[in-house]
Length: 138
Image 1 (cartoon, rainbow, N blue to C red):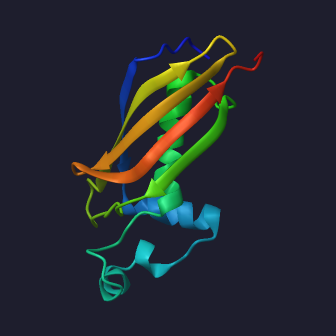
Image 2 (image 1 turned 180 degrees about the vertical axis):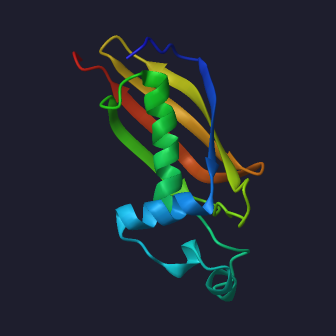
C-alpha cells in the first residue's frame, strides 16, 4: 500500500453507472429485483426511476479505496449507510457516482482510516462511509 498520511485528500474517483451495469450486477449477485431494471415497477414502488443496487454503489466506493491503496487486500473494515438511491436513467450517460476520501488516521502499525464522501448528482448516496486499511506486514 502506498503511504497514506493523515489529512490527505483522496480522489475524486468517478464511476459511470449505466443500465447494462445493473443487469451484469444482477446476474452476478442474484438480485433481480425489478426496481433495478423496470421504470414501471420502480415508480410504482415510489422511486423516481430505476435505481442501482445499494451493494453495487458500496462496491464502487470500495473500488476507489483499493485504487488509492494500491492493494485490494488492504481493506480490513468497510462500512456505509445507504442514504439516497442512485437513479440510473435509461440513456447512454447513466449516472455518475463520485467518491472522495479523507485520511483521518494513519498509524505506525500500518493501520489507515479513510472517511468517504460518495455522491451522485450532488447528493450524498452513502452516509457514514469509511474504511480501515492495513498493510500486509502490519
